[in-house]
Length: 313
Image 1: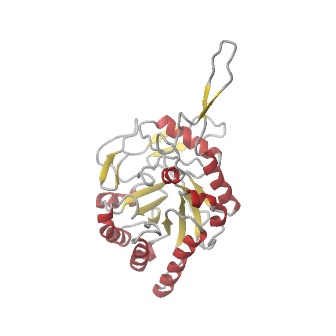
Image 2 (image 1 turned 60 degrees about the vertical axis):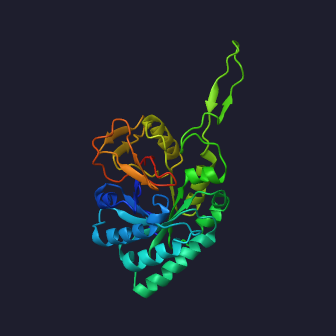
Image 3 (image 1 turned 120 degrees about the vertical axis):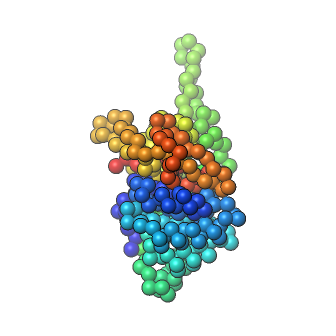
């Protein structure tokens, strides 16, 4: 059965093609670790990444966190082999599969049917499902998606980067504010007008939250791309926390919001890390948190491979 109360304050994305990050992942301190076969892996590396992930699941100690695998999209030639190979060879180590770009209930049912058959053949306990809502069609169907496969479905994640692309939104960064998404006040006596920025993603995340809360799922926030702006990052995290979203997070931060809603206390617990996106490497450096170059894997991954939301509990 779906674990609706799974500890899910932070989620760490680890590219399946990066052996060093895979080695560090079990002890990184995240509540949930997902090993990524999708956006963080270049097409030429897909097959080897799948083998790496299977080996990591079987050979490493995952007792400190829940562990998931993000499969490739259902519209790709990699998806079925991701499910079959990973679950047949390491399904007893998996807590969930993460399905990207879910557009309709049938997408979840396809994965669930494959899981049911493999579980029966291999004598496995049921493996649960997390999904990404990151397309216009997925958001249009979010209520019906949330009601699908309740025995497996645990959480829905808002994929802001791909959602922006799908809706053809004009964006200046991944997550966060857009100065063009603003209104002007009427002029005061001196003729001055003030500009007030809006939250470009408020409707989408609010709709996802309503669907999740109506059907007992965990709503998970998405990435904030400007790693040089920790204040902006925390502002976004506070905003979604006000909507009762369980944000994906950064294990290196311990954040607490006191009852008085004072600004959060932030305690760096370790170095930020490198995260591979496709074939490129980015050095992730958040102000006041970089300690060394020997950092482990970090952050929630989407199309651009970065997530910086904090969970407030």
